Amino acid sequence: MSRFAASAGIIWCAMSLASCARNSGADATPAVTEVPTVAVVQAARADLATDLILTAEFTPFQEIDVMAKVSGYIKDIKVDIGDRVREGQLLATLEIPEMQDDLTRAAAAIDEANADLAAARDELQRAQSTHDMAHLSYSRVLDVSKKEPGLVPQQEVDEAHSRDLVAEAQVSGAKSRITVSEQRIRVSQAEQARVKTLFQYATISAPFAGVVTKRYANSGSLIQAGTASQSQAMPVVRLSENGLLRLALPVPESAVPLIHLGERVDVRVSALHRSFPGRVARFSDKVDESTRTMKTEVDVPNPTLVLVPGMYAEVDLVTEEHKHVLTVPVEAVDGAGSAARVFTVQPSGAIQIIPVALGIETARQIEIRSGDLKDGDDVVVGSRSGLKDGNRVRAKVIRLASDATPRP
Image 1 (tube, rainbow, N blue to C red):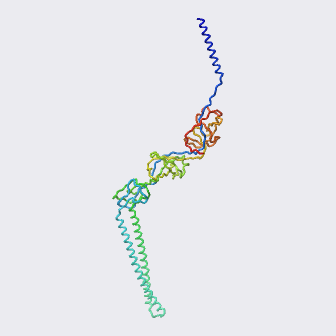
Image 2 (tube, rainbow, N blue to C red; image 1 turned 180 degrees about the vertical axis):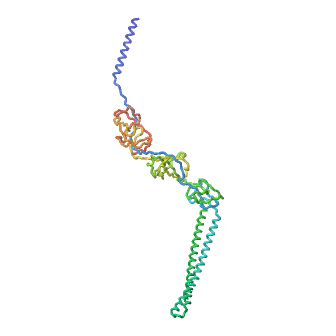
Image 3 (cartoon, rainbow, N blue to C red; image 1 turned 90 degrees about the vertical axis):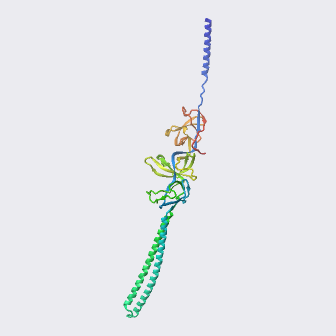
């Protein structure tokens, strides 16, 4: 029993020595440090732009209720809801019998004035003849009286002179009646032209090309003259110009200085799953005090009338744009403002931390305005935890989605 215990002790000691020997050999092997792998992308030049997404509702470029200038009954209406009309196209015709009587009366007045003028001219001719005879008689009597004093009584001379003056006055009166007759003709012609002008309003035409969106009257309806802004007269139809639509956008105060007339915009209509080109056409140039926004209108051409007033649309307004600038992904920037920096991987595999100044920022890209970063440098976009200047790393180039336009 004691021999067995002694043998067991010897074996245990041998195993312990062997274990110590193996551990000593392992400790003697030098440790190998693994170089970490980091994800990088290359800094590149591109076009960057910041935008502002605003929602608005399409409205017609212009829309009016077509009124009648004169009162009358609808004799015939040519259009209905949904009809497309051209500028000047006939919409409806009014029946106004009393206006035809006014035209007849005006024509009769002109004829009467012409007859009076003819009579006045005849009277002038008779008065002129009478004056010529009276003046010739007076001239003869006066001539004899001068050559043969006392031969012709002075009373006869005076009577001849009086007859001459009366005849001359009759000529002047006839001329005045001619002037009066001519003036009556002009007045009658003006009245006839006025009635004809009003009679033209019996035909109601489209003031511009558009779509009939509402019909108020039918054949036989009595239409009152819509000559006053506060009139309760019933319109004939409502006409909407839909070939060009407006979008009234409430632009925030911060973006007001960045709005420019003529700027092209992208208009997205979710109901149609399409985009349409638009243009900033006008703005109020005044910020509303209650909303702190400025009303800005975008014109959207709609030649096929696929867009309908009342549809909602999203407008992508480009507020700032920089061309051919150095950019990196947003993930590559550490910090913000004056403390911003990027981690680059040098060709030797060493990390270099570069302070940078930032420019405009989009959803995925950011502009590098200044710093030692160059086009084509590898910048770290993965985790930068534990990385310091001079650390050795293995760079793995990856591809990230970009919203910038690359430049060669």
